[in-house]
Image: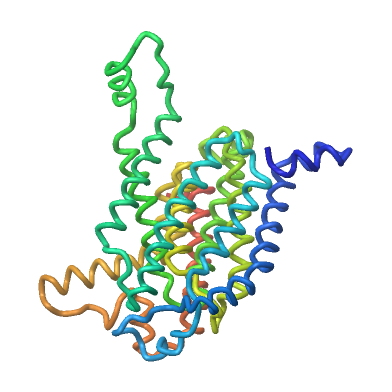
Amino acid sequence: MGLYKMLCLFMSNHHVIDTVFFKSFASFFSALVVALGIGSVVIIWLRHLCVFQTIRVECPDTHRLKRDTPTMGGIIMLISSIVSILMWADLSNLYVWYVLFIFIVYGLLGWIDDFLKIKRKNALGMRGLNKYFWQTLSAFLLSIVIFMMRIDCINTDLEGWYYLKDIVSKLDIWGVLLSYFVIVGTSNSTNLSDGLDGLAIVLIILITTGLIVIAWISSNVYFSNYLQILYIDRVQELIIICAAIIGTGLGFLWFNSYPAQIFMGDTGSLSFGGAIGVITVLLQQEYLLLVIGGIFVMESLSVILQVSYFKIFKKRIFKMTPIHHHFELQGCPEPKLVVRFWIISLVLLLLGLTIVIFKII
């Protein structure tokens, strides 16, 4: 039921504590406090276990100094977010469990990837096909479940194979595929962007801030009608989840800001990127993510273009990808580069919200 139900027993002003507004703030501060509280402990623990960042051979020379920085900081992020969500969200709402599912599955995948990198003492981790297979399987199954829940699949006149055919005929196949690509694509794009101190976590915070605005509008029938944005029933729980992610992000940034005391690793980047993808799908704002997540798109495209161009012409377009390394090798200091990427992401966030709210396009 969540902690807020228990608090209601001790507070006479029931209607205040039972509001999404209160629970969102409580979720934010709970996640922030937990992240700040366990951060130092986890860092010391990971140092004791020698869980240090593995550095790519071809990385910029400045990154050699990061060899003694602990990784797997996604543990901090997952614990603080999941605890906060379980405390304040309505656990009878399926949307909550969709996000928790990706948190757990992608978090486990990321942890295995980080563990293998540390064990093998290189930056390879899991085989790409193995990791992509499990990402694909979990995202595709979740996408099917999400779209099944959007339609009325119950038909007492049908049984067995015919019941299954009825479900399949009603499913939006293209919608399922788009949902799958958004979840997997956002997860991997976040992973690619996690290469500079404080970069990925602030991008996660900014994108989630945009999603919390859309979730708030979509959960209110009056505002959604006035702004002509699709009203979605029970989506208010996503506001609480987004608040937890933002609180977690700020707490983790305390330790991840330059010079970083810990990195999120694949444990954090895969799980939180996947969660952003799921929330976007649930809000039915997949195309908005292309704008507010523009840095993620740019990072992924730089890798795709580099690999494709090299295979065809045996030459490189960029000095190194993802593209933030290209700018590093051109002489831009890491702190300045990170702040500039934050600024671009903030501008893209405002642009995306303007497009959606005011229907510019």
